[in-house]
Length: 473
Image 1 (cartoon, rainbow, N blue to C red):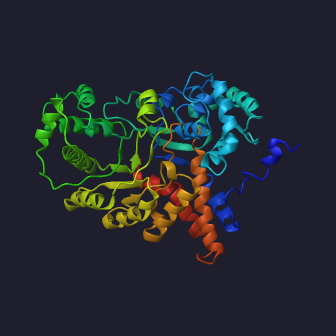
Image 2 (cartoon, helix red, strand yellow):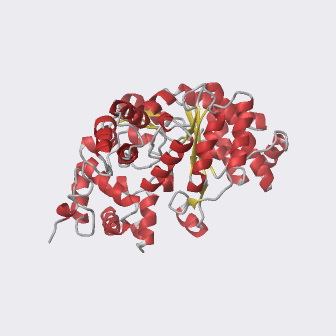
């Protein structure tokens, strides 16, 4: 009988994904040892600031990970072992039973990369190894070097940007300034609830929270803008220099198509808006926010194309962000171009990163950025890394190839985790290996010169230095 370790002996070797000698040189000599700047993630600032200890591998690895949840449901695992009341060990064992069936899904690579890189476990995770791996990893997690700050240090994470609502008081970011010596934690402004006027009742509850946090009584639309300006100033004073927006698509109207004050008055009186009024409010409010970002020299990020909460029954049972979202097929190009053009027309278009979830939009995004790069900043407008359903080998390669063909890959600010898990940072390694392999293959094909110094510099820039210079943290 071949042992699990022997089965894994030719899997995830030091040259994993590297198919040429030049690719191996690029990765091992130029990319692998660089620090990580993770400029967009969903890690808990509290967990970083308080150096949280996880009680089990399930707590750090399975809780909140809807990628894994979707795979388990597909295999027929009962919800009690996913988000239900089963024990942590029982949940892990169900995940261990699931993993062998995830072959060719990125979860298979990520799972074993994470077990290797954090815990030194070479065995393949499966039903026969699950119990032992649960004990090994859970025991290690009780030691100080496996608390949150130790996990970040282990992966050489220099900086993370969390995702924070405008009403957040950033208390844990302040604590982390002194409590997290190895990894810097900065906030990123995520105002999605500010323009969620399709639900007037919950919107008005949110407005009260925004009023309380800003100290601005919000009765008119201009009051809303004053409150947002107040919160942007607050984030800026606490190291914030990024915003982020989760949008199905951008909307565009001629300014003044609707009276924004009349729309706002309807909302705060609890009245429902029609679809055009909702879209105009989102457009107008985002436009005002983008001008504020430009004034502060911030970078804005637009995550476009997710079709969220498609299963209403499960949304009612489990809430949002539980694994019932998909790629959407929204029209993107014309409104996106018009929106960016409106800001550019008054020279108020700040540094911008566009992420698409639908791979059919790759070329749209790769060409859109060239419309608004104006020579003022290297790579001012970016085609962001492959996101969510696309942050796997095929998706990353397609994003890199589209950007290479229609823009300048050399200016790319590289990878991010977009994750809620402290064990997700090998995704940066995964990206770097894929990048080095693509460039190395071009050299092997005679399509690029074997200029190690120059290509090594380009790989190093994309892996780390471009982001460090672009964001100027």
